[in-house]
Image 1: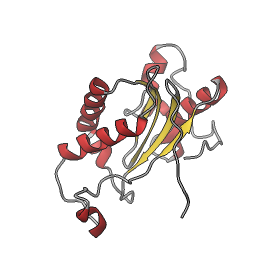
Image 2: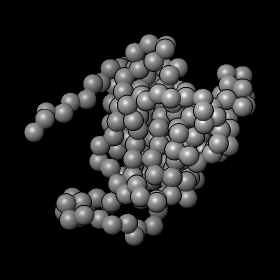
Image 3: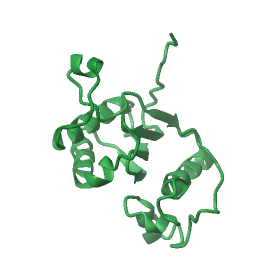
Amino acid sequence: MTNYRRIYTPGATWFFTINLAERNNNALLIENIDQLRQAFRYVKQRRPFDINAAVVLPEHLHCVWTLPPNYSEYSIRWNLLKAHFSRSIHKGEHVSVSRISKRERGIWQRRFWAHLITNERDFNQHIDYVHWNPVKHGWPKQAADWPYSSFHRYVKLGIYPLDWGGAEEFNFDVGE
């Protein structure tokens, strides 16, 4: 068995991918977007962090977060967020025997992808990836057509033009 360890760097910026346990034809996250937004607010009030970018798709989400100086525990934040969201929605998902024994719901994958942002190029590349991800998965034809994204805030700030992020625009992978 591999000894899996996470890096914890105070005040760092991170790219995350968080998946539902059941990704097949599941629209749980966008069907419960208000509960997910509330879970983010709940955690941010208790364990502050900045959301640099975020996108919510039907069965997974991507975020770029910056933690406050002297804080490095992003796993606690994700655990709180997952738990708060899970308690706010109806039960009914498939729950494995191992999850039942640990009193867990069957909503989220236990692990998540975390990538430490190392420089400005890395940051910009991941912000682009977050905003382009719905197009990559074939949901909208361009980023502006996806409502569950910080892309719209970036347009208001003048960082992206409204027509940025069409299907032909990108061909890259950041380790999703």
